[in-house]
Length: 372
Image (cartoon, rainbow, N blue to C red; front, side, top):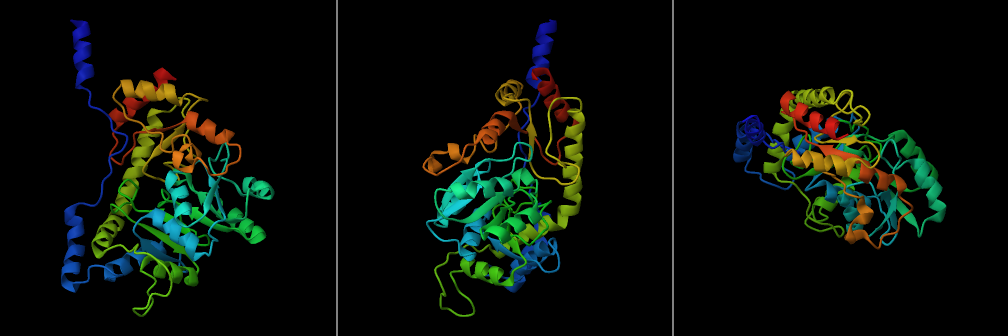
């Protein structure tokens, strides 16, 4: 009878999803939709898009300019083109990143060159790239650095690298909406539904260079600038007024939502207190994002994933084994990647969302502690 009761309790426990995205509710978007109805301006850089860009730029300071685009991958691709990165050259990047980083370089006509991440910060460092440049398998015209899972790199150090080497630096801050705030490097942020602030699909590029912002704007709109003559080869990467309505409603809710994300992070941190699980520096204390990627003991990730799965708790290895492991990039050059391979074996994406409660956090922690 006792065994049957235990089985009944186990069967009654609900699965825990790895993520539960939440966009603004219909009532919050409605005032913006009514503005669209009144203006009858639906796309092509309308008043809501302009307002959204102004509010996004304001987060980066008085001299910042924001250019919205259909997604952050397009933002990276078009920034490479706007900076004049030479097609056929190499674009350096960490292999420890989402595949969108590499896809963007390919779409811009560059060849990804994969380098190793730092063991502790999980980022490509200027020192690593500068040491590798003399042995590069071809000319390097750009580097895309990455804010892993929302943790920002040292912008000043990369600006110094750019000044000394002439290699253009772009920051892939797709998951760093909360932490990004320095426009001196072109910074690309995602507004995908899974991000900490989302509008379904979308992204934006922030810069303090008006000329670069102008080139980006032309590249998102068929090369038009003040006339119906296309000035150069471009694409259509605009967002609509309807997308901007969702983005503006999300920004309205951001102060309260940010607090909810921090509260959820503290709930999970407290549940895992005393375990051998490590969090990214500042995660849930200084900055927040929509995922919780943790460090586990060397090589422990597969075992912990199996234990969590057995308990009906979903997980993700968001970046798999690194970009270099994807067949799409098998022919791309790379350096030795021991830290990337270690991170693939030892990091784990835990369930995390803004309304994660203490009971679910305790379930996750109990499994991790018992399986550790």
